[in-house]
Image (cartoon, rainbow, N blue to C red; front, side, top):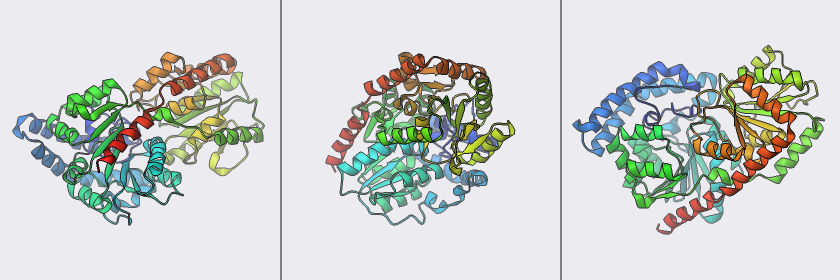
Length: 487
C-alpha cells in the first residue's frame, strides 16, 4: 500500500489514494520501486472516479461498482507489487491464496474480527485483544493483517492463546470479502485506525455485521482525499456502527464526511494505555550488567527507514568524539533491510554486533543492530535516550509513546504527520525534542548525556503525559460491549 506509512506493503487502491494528494502523488520508503506503474494506476483512477463522483455517475452503488472494476483492472499491478516486495522479503510469496480468500485456515465461527494492517497496529491492538479475550471467554477472535511482519507479530503475541485465529485480510474485492466473512461469520468487526475498505464494509452491512473503527484517526490531508469521492465515502462511513476517534478535530472530520453523528465518539488513543511489564525492565537491567555497561552511555535509533541510517551513524560518529564509550542500538523498521544496514555499519568502520547473533556486547562494540522481531520495547528499555525514526525522512514518524512509557527522553525528526497530536502533547510537556539532521541529532544526544537532570526531566514529563491520557482502552471496550449486547 502506498500511504503515509510506507511500512504497509500491500496496495489498497482506495485508502492509499485517500491518503495521497491527487495533484502531488508521492511514494516513500519501500514504495519508491513501483512509483511509475503504481502512480499511473492511481492517477487514472483519480480522474475516472472524480468524474463519476462529480455527477456522471451519481449514486454510491455505481461509484462502488466502478471502484471494484478498477481494482480488478489493477490486479496485475498488485501482483507486480507483491513480486517486487518478495525479492527483498520472501514471505510475500507465501499464503497468496489468503489474499483472495482462498485456502483460508479452518476457523471457529461467530466471534469478533479484528483487523490491524501491519506490525505497528498489531502491537498497539494487543492490549485490546487481550481484554476482549477476558471479556468474552467463549468467543474466538480472528485477527487479520496485510503484511508478513504483522502476521509474524500476531502469531508471536498470541502463540499460547487457542482462541486467536489469524489469516491475511483478502483484497477489497466484493467476492473475496464476502467469502472471507462467510468463512468467519463474525458477530462484530473492529478495524484499527483508518484502514477503510469500501467492499469489506459494504459486505459486512449486507450481512448485518456491525463494524467499529477503533483508535480512529484522520488527518486533514486524508480528509481532503476522501472528500473528493464524497458519495462513495459517505455511503461507506454511514454503514459503520461506531467510530472511536482519538481527537475531537478528527471526529468532526468523520462527521463532515458522512459518519452518523450519533455514532462518533472521542475516546482518545489506546496507545497511551501501554502497560510495561516490570520483568522487561528487570531483564534489560540484567543484560546491561552482563555487558558491563551500567555506566556506559547507550542510545537507540528505532524504526529507521532508508535514508536515515546514514544520518544516525554520522551522529554516532560525532558523539564518539566526546563519549568514546557510547553504544548505539540501531533498529531498522523493515526486516528486509537488516542485512544492508549491517553492511553499512561495517563499511563505515563501526564494530557492530547483530542482536540475533547472541554475541556479547563488549566494550569495543560501538553498534548493536536490532534485527529480531518483537523486541523493540526491550531494546528501548536497554537505552538511556531514544530517537524514533521514520521522521528524518517524510514518512510520518512512528510511535513516540513506547519510549515515553519506558521513561526515556524522546527525540525525533520533523516529519511527524502520522502523530501530530501525540507529538504536540509531548512537545508541550517538554518530553520531546525535535532534530533535523545528523548534526542536530548528535548535539541533542550529547546534551542529554551531559545533562542527566534534563534527561530525567524529559522522561518524567513523558510519563506524566502517558498517565494523563490513559483510559481510551476502557472507553473503547465499553462501546464494543454496548454493540455486542445488541447482538
